[in-house]
Length: 139
Image (cartoon, rainbow, N blue to C red; front, side, top):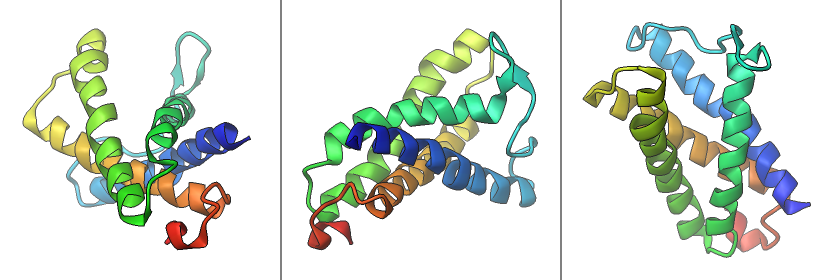
């Protein structure tokens, strides 16, 4: 059951934290595209933001595997660093080139910020869903 919670937490963190920070960057005119992209994506035709949240949910599984037994400081710190670094590296080194998208210092920085927010959001949702059993570890 906790693995389902980690998927759901990461799925929700994508919609709330990742896209929320993306929205703030959009309002500040730092990024040109609006958050919550509803354009259909191949092959299933689901909205892009739902596809992104699905992949975010999958990333929640290895994140939970890494942080589940850590104390408070490690839990939050590793969630932030894991979120910022690993999904960003995969996106910039694998996904962007496969899609023919440009990779620059700006896209790296954006990825680190957005995915770091996702990592913290996933950790927070895991606490809120009760996956962190020890109250001392939860805060």
